[in-house]
Amino acid sequence: MELYSFLRHFADSWMLILMVALILGVVLYTFRPGSRSLHDDAANSIFRNDRRPAPAGAGAGSRNTKEA
Image (cartoon, rainbow, N blue to C red; front, side):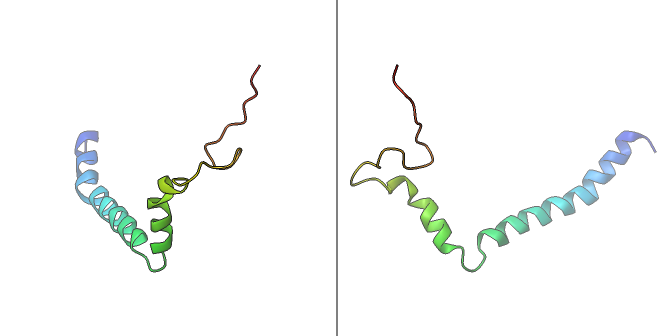
C-alpha cells in the first residue's frame, strides 16, 4: 500500500472518529454542570471596571513601567 492510500484511509476512518470525539468533548466540557458562573464571569470581564478605573497595578494586563 502506498503512502497516499494509507493516509487517505486513515483520514477517512480514524481521523474522522478522533475529530468527532474532540468536538463532542469540547461541547460537553462547555455545557458541564457548574460552569455557568465561569462563563458569566468571562462574559462580563470587560465591564469589570466600567464605573471607575482599576487601581494602579491591578489586573492581568497592567504593566509596571518606570518613566525615565
